[in-house]
Length: 136
Length: 136
Image 1 (cartoon, chains in turn red, brown):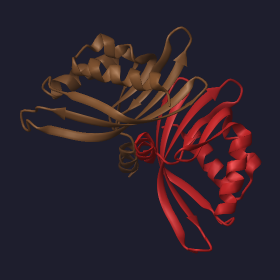
Image 2 (cartoon, chains in turn green, orange; image 1 turned 60 degrees about the vertical axis):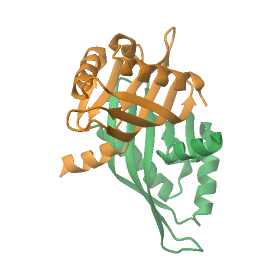
Image 3 (spheres, helix red, strand yellow; image 1 turned 180 degrees about the vertical axis):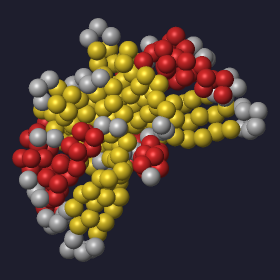
Image 4 (cartoon, chains in turn orange, purple; image 1 turned 120 degrees about the vertical axis):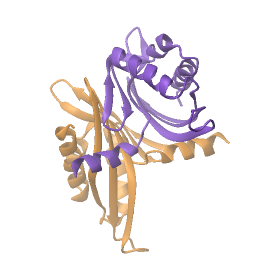
């Protein structure tokens, strides 16, 4: 198990929770892709940062993300991480909002920069359902 | 959506179904990792080929794999594919054995060789459950 990757994910969660988006950006490669929601991708740091600003506003600046359970498969400069993400927030409509998701991350090790997240899909397998609908 | 990756996965399924393990190996990078089952990885083509021979024997040479629904996220030379895999077989204990799994693949585009599968995790999120148990 790769403890470095686990720590990177925890650091990114902490940065999201304190809304330090510059720190969040250190998590991503320059060509990173974030699944904002099924069917909507943010490509590159500029779009990803702006997506996090919007997500933070959507959750009324109360979003708390935590990922404890993780499985890491690593080979060479590539790694796949599957994690159980727990989200909670105080929404106007639901002050005790909480949900669980299976996140899927792909990491690439870059020379001089270490492990960077290249693909961030916090929707896990839900993407297939969307794909099915969009093909109808 | 990347039709090349979808076609590669279909070709690999067909090669598995006709037990043409040399053709199956064309699907993988030299450093590929296959999750044989949670907690057991096959690393490199030699181990992966031998895992497929064992899987084929386990399923009494009747394994049929099919993956239609897929979601592909691609950036630069890296791609994540999430697919719904349908397995069926005629086992001695259960002649109508069938199951469904969510597979997760990581692909890397290599110069002169095209897209190759680097990580093949046909257990999807089940890995987390195992991780949880193994940490107890």
